[in-house]
Every structure is written in structure tokens, then in C-alpha cells.
Length: 170
Image (cartoon, rainbow, N blue to C red; front, side, top):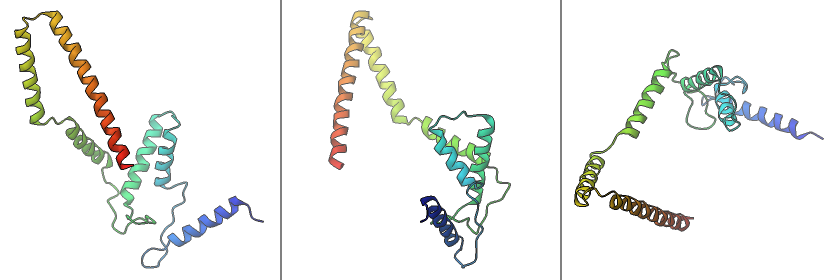
């Protein structure tokens, strides 16, 4: 009687042999799982939850594995074999990541003109209110407390509304 481990090993070998044929029927290179960049990246992502120490060497290994997997340029369909068209081996992956990060930060930091107009109107209204109450600190303090409570109640109402919408789609 075979053990479960030997059955799994044989099954994995059969799957690798089946997936090692490309679209022309010729044998494609099979990368050992312990050495492939994808396995390094996956191991890094899985171990992230274990809070392993992030050292400079681990970050460099992860960057190299991620770069190798990116340059490998796999096909989009299963079994994700390396595609026929290849990227240059000297592709500047660090610059690419830097450009992607700058684009992301531009989207995050960008404030629309409507937001600036709304902010300016709020400042003008608050300034007029301060002039109206003649800078009385008691009235201003109670106003801020009242606005905080209104915001809190609105937040509770909005959260209840979101929960209702989520339950409607469940």
C-alpha cells in the first residue's frame, strides 16, 4: 500500500510532465520549484504573516526573485509557462517600480479642484461665524463639540446603511 506522500509526489511529477509541453508539443524547460523565482516570491509572501525579520539580504533576495519573475514574462493562461517573447535581461526593474510608485502617489496625493473649493468655502463660513459670535471661546467650543457629535451620529447612520446594503447583496 502506497503512502499519501508517495502518491502526491508521483501526481506532482505527472503534472509537471504534462505541463512541460508547449503549444508546439515540444518539451519546455521545467524549473525546479526550489529554484524558481515564483517559488521564492510565494514563500516570501506566505512567510510575511509569520513576521520574519526583514533584513537587507532578504529584501535583496525578494527583489531579485520578483525581478526575475517579471522579466520571465509568463503566459496568462495555465500552466503559466514562460512566453516566447522575452524582455531584455538588463531591464531596469528598480526604475520601473519607482515609476509605478510615483504614479500611485500622484493618484493618492492629487486633490481635485472641487475639494479645494469646498475647503475654501468652509474656511470662509467658519471665519464669518467667528466674527458673528465675536470670538467667544465658550460658543466656539460648544459649536465644535456639537459638530463632532453630529459627525459621529452621521458616521453611525452611514455605517448602518452600509451594513444594510451589504446584507442585501449577500
